[in-house]
Length: 66
Image 1 (cartoon, helix red, strand yellow):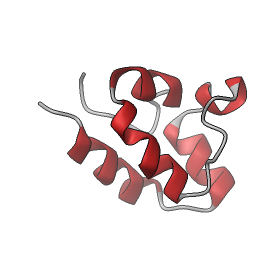
Image 2 (cartoon, helix red, strand yellow):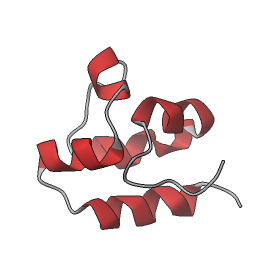
Image 3 (cartoon, one colour):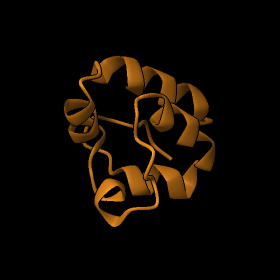
Image 4 (cartoon, one colour):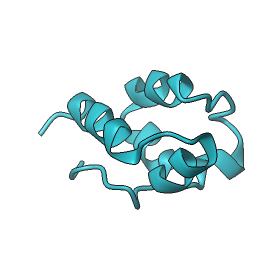
């Protein structure tokens, strides 16, 4: 997978890297199976949960092999 950006869809991330689920859980996204949350971008999820988007992107990209 290419680098995860603020525009990457959460469902796409979880399909390719299920190990990313705890990162989303840590910001309060506990319904990762819900269609609404899987269809959000990283930026949208961060905005809803009041989290700095860049810090989450850094954590997610550490999980994804090059």
